[in-house]
Length: 450
Image: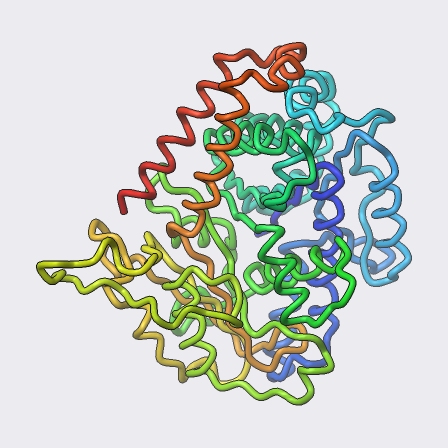
């Protein structure tokens, strides 16, 4: 089954490009480290999922590109075409001359409705090219105007037009120090609207990815492209084909459906986080060896301690005892409780790995059976130069603190009416803000009570 990617705004288009590029590089890589037959069925499944075939033989990304300014889209289209390995369909993009000026309301209330028909026609055409549609993968930032405002609007339109298709939003959480003065407003408005229409939100934090670039990839001057490539690598490590059940003889056909089934058991809990190990520069990779027990041990502790990378994990954090002692300390040292976890393993000897540590009932909320809350996908085909690699997608309390901060900052601004007039002039009223705050307070309280 195929996934249609919808790239929204500057950030969404730049990351979308890197995702297709990472997938294509992996597809052509000679480092598969598996049998020829295995490699062929992997490539076949990958192609069906992300690309449509053209007569010229160059795969065409199943994607729709949307931005309110032309520059990024034209760069993206030409860079992809120049690669010679894949390209975008030149008919599948939409851009205008004026941006949304970092104003969510402008993207959502003005540009969205104005261009709805054109954009949805492009999406419909792309969906019709799929033999079977698994769903939509939208990529956007939360902080700006087009990606966030227009992104929230387009996600609602997708839900109306394709009520039974899965929608996964890939959302980029802004830098804590801020890129845009109203980013907290934009973020609150985006998150609350997406929560109504998407099946799940997969969140990447700019600050965490920046750290990975600096500390693990040893990049001295970090550019947005470096950050985007790390995000793309992590996404590819989950979305490339795998066997989603023990002893399966065919690669999973419905990646988005399997992901939702594994990780979103209740519509109140839709926040997904992604961790991937190992991650390092190519120079270091040559001198490194990894064992599965080592990778799994690190991945589990990253989950428990809510660490975003394998360096600097707090090994003191332990799961709380199921029967707490009388004087139990206030919730074990920032322990990150999970609703559901999915581990994706790629590379040599994947059959022999012990993942019992992830089935520990202490990791999960009490209302779910740990056997149902934990799933494994695997393939002997290695991913992107890593002989062995493991990814973890988790529905857990990982975002509580960050979300609480952003809602708190936005509320303080709203209480003093700062910048609210910039939104009301485009039709977003104070009641709309209050509704959004209420939605997110509910989400926070649900996750906090796990």
